Image: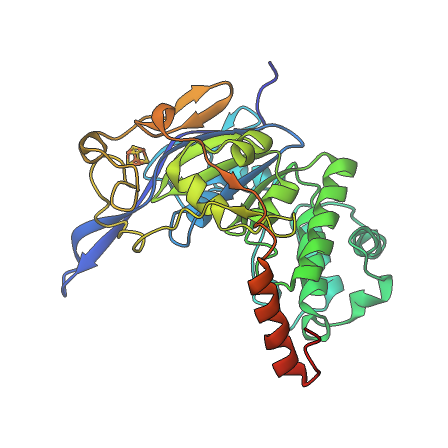
Length: 356
Ligand code: SF4
């Protein structure tokens, strides 16, 4: 088996909570609480979960933009933990990030050409031919060479995100962390940017850690999916397996909210009750037990471990005994009386005779 491009082992990030004039530490926010994952070269791992589940913190930890409390990140077999600043800078050339808000991540005082040339200067790439390289990058993301002279405010949201992608591509990365990269875009523009990312992956072999809360987008782009809840991965596996046979009750609840493409078809809705508990005081045992419809006494007492069966891992004590996630058939045609009522309603709205 080939060595994974990215390996994450037991990654933990607890942010201390300070109170009082002396800044005494009174607790910790457990943003990431023991995450293990791998990404192969040219693969997309989608990370999903509700706001505050720790997925964005995980993305920053992977790039070592923030220091972990414990755990290990290996990129190309190299442990990023002991690297000093220059070594880390050199390593970062192969690991880039695309943010959710492309406007906020672009310097409004720099032209697009200057923005794209900056990483080239920083890493000593394409010396003497920056203008040519900038034109190539713009072409790669579907923009014109003359766009290099313009400023970020002159572009639409989708075009700005293309500029953000071009900036990430400038240093020829092997891995890009896409942190809610299409969440702020209109649906039609989202599809264009996702297609662009897929096209770049096929041409350049880039791996993505694709962080999103929209499962429909993740279903489109990811090869594998990891579901996070309160800082932990509760399910991870091949996309087709996770979407077709979700094992964890939380995954089921998230998936049940996605509309089915077949007209009239419905999923059994597994509604999530209550809010996500505070990551400062996560529930004991299984973090999800306060919202889980299947919870048993053991769930609040013992934390479940990730158990892998047939390549799909799940952290749930009871996943083997849960009823299968059902897809309901399309609703039956309305009765004759109901059809008559609908025609009357239609006639009332349109002002035309009902014809009954
Ligand atoms: Fe629900 Fe228990 Fe499974 Fe947690 S361990 S997801 S509470 S059934």
